Image (cartoon, rainbow, N blue to C red; front, side, top):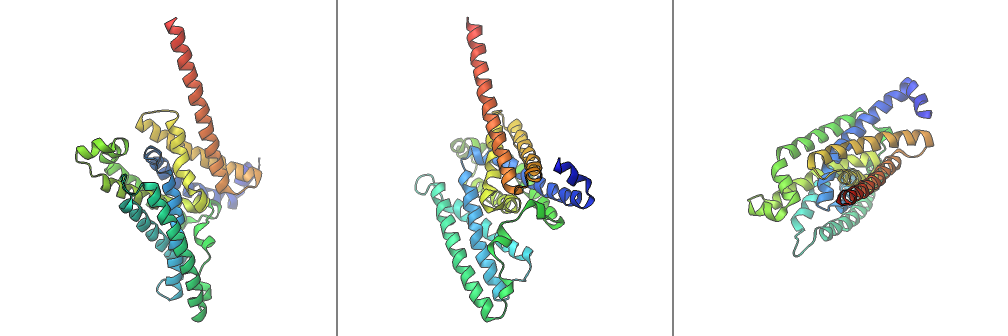
Length: 303
């Protein structure tokens, strides 16, 4: 196996360790949040927030072109993160079950941010050319389309800081958050502030999505927030077992995807997502088999 051969090489095994550590930070927080995303039917939010990052890229490019922002990739990434968080807050503020459904709010911010990003990037290129700073405007791909195999220790540190912050926050507010997630109407009657819960959840999702883009790219980041939870919910209907299963699905998808990437010489991001898709398909099959066995057992007992 090519994977084992790569692991025997010291240099390659070193960057594999970095890639795994960076990937584990992403799948850990996405695995936990994925259950809430599926339960609240927020799968589209990943597309909305990740594509809103294009607006952040345009803003970062303009700030770098005029000299306000340092010519550092990490500084520009911070601007993208802040823009995505602002977009997520905007989606939460605008959406309302009666007047503006959440998918409509997400769609508005998605297309608006992408258009803004295109305009700002074009303006930034012109400003940078006039000031002789053309090199400071990075391409969209340089910021948005990362790869887990190019991760460095800085990515690992940032990933785990965000992961710990997201998981600690989710744990602190777990009771009102879960009450709101599973029964929004009753939670409101008992004094749980639904708007506050939605706002916090959107912020956590925005942070997770931006970090996930470093693993699978902007287009595939959504899968990391949908597939693990969807697969786990096919195997159990209890929250804590589902959460643990969701994280395990994410870890399994990460490892299997990286192995497939090495063995087949495919890009790692799509391989990770395909592995998670196969795990979801397997969980659906297992759920159906268990349902058929349960029905057969009940019929046998009745006779």
